[in-house]
Amino acid sequence: MVELQIEALGESHQRSPIENRQSNIPLFIAFRVLFNARWYYPVLAVLFQDFGLSIAQYAMLNVVWAAAIVGFEIPLGALADQIGRKKMVVLASSLMVVELALFAFAPLGNPSLAFWFFALNRLLSGAAEASANGADEALAYESLEPDQRAYEWPRVLESQMRWQSAGFFIAMMIGAVVYSEGAVQTIIHTLGLPWSVTHHTTMRFPIYLTLLNAVLALVVSLKMREAATVTRTASSKAALRDTLVTGLWILRTPLPLAIILGGFVIDNIVRLFMTMVSNYYRLIALPDASFGVIGSGMAVIGFFTPQLARWLVGRNPMRANFAIIAMSVMIGLIGAALALPIYGLIFLVPIGAAISLNQFFVSHYLNATVTDTRLRATVLSFRGLAYNLAYGVVGILYSWLTHALRNRGTPEMVFGQSLRWLPWYFAVTVGMLAIAWARLLKAEHSKVES
Image (cartoon, rainbow, N blue to C red; front, side):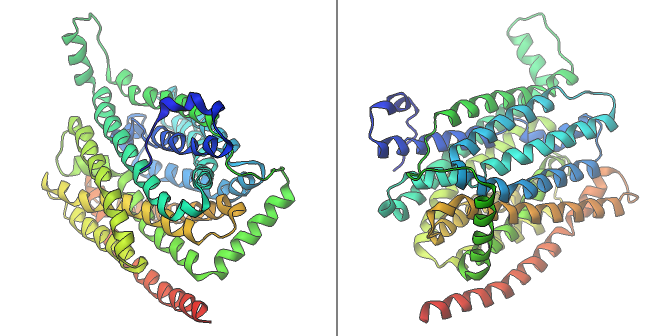
C-alpha cells in the first residue's frame, strides 16, 4: 500500500535514483490534494453571482475555462514529454498562484469589469489545468518499477483519491463556514474579539484559503524529481511530431480510443451538474449554511469509492464497469430533475460516486494501454483534451438553454427547468457511445485474434 509519508521527503538525498523517483508518489498525492481541494467549491456558483454575474455569464466563463484547457492541453502535454514532466507541474502550480491572486482581489461593483476579470482568471486556470493534466500522473506512474505498475498503480490511485476526498471534506466544511457572514461573526463573538465583518469580506475568505493551497502546491511541485532516465531536450519539432504520432496512435488503436470516449461522455455531464450544485441546493430549499456540510458528505463518498473501483476492476470487464457508471449518472440526473425539497440530496450520491469511479477506471485502463512510456504525458493530455472539449460543448449548449428559458420565471425557476433536459442529453450521448464501443471493441477483438 502506498502511504503518504511527507516527513520522509527531506531524506531523498540519501536514496538511490529509484528511491528518489519513488518519492514522487507521496508528492503526487499531496499535489493532487492541494491543486484540487479548493475551499470555494461549496459556494462556487453563488460566489460568482456575489460579484454580479448571471447564470449565463457563469456558464460562459466555464466555457472559457474549458476552451483554454483545450487550446493548451496537447501542446503542453507534448512539451512535458520533451522537457520533463516536473517542469510542467511547477508551471501548473505557478499559474494556479496567479489565477487565485486574480480571483482573491477581483473588484466589486462593476459586473461588466468583473466578467472580463474572471475571464482572464478562467484562462489562466485552464492553462494551469492543462499544464498539470497528464504531466503529474505520468511523473508518478513512471516512478514505479515497470514490472510492478499493473499491481501498484491501482493502489496509488486508491490512496490518492482517498487523500483527495479527505482534502475535499475539510475544504467543503470550512469553506462554506468562512463564506457565511453569520458563521464568521458568531466565531468572532465566541472568541471575544471586538471585530465585525460584512458579506463582502467573508465571501473572499474561501478564495484566500485556496490561494494558500496554491502556494503550498508550488512548494510540493518543486520537491518532485524527474522520473524518466532519458535526457530531454526542448524542441518544437519534436513536440509536434510526438503530438501527431500520439494522436494517430489513439485513433488507430481501438482500446485507448474507447476508454477516452467512455470517460468524456460520463465526465462532461457530471462536471456540468457539479459546477451548478450550489444552485441545486437552493432549488431544493437547503440553507446556504448547509452547503459545506453537504459537500463534506460528498467527499466522504469519494473516500470509499476508490476501494470499490479497485474491486470492480479486478472483477468485471471494462464495458461492465463503464455501464455501472452510466446507470449511476442516469439515476442521479433523473432524480435531480424532480427537484424534491431536501430529499433531492439523495440523488447526489450516485452522481458523486460516478466522479471517483470514472477517474479511477480511465486512469487505470488508459495507462495500461500505453506501451511507449516516452509519450505517456501526451496520451494523457489527449484524454484531458477530449474531456474539456466535451465540457466546453455542453457548457455552450447549457448557456443557450438557460438563455432560451430566461423568460419562464426567476433564475431559480429557470435552473429547475434546465435540469429536466440533462437526462435526455445524457441518454443521447450514451447511446452514441454504445454504438461507437460496439465497433471499437469488435475491432480490438479482431486485432487480438489476428
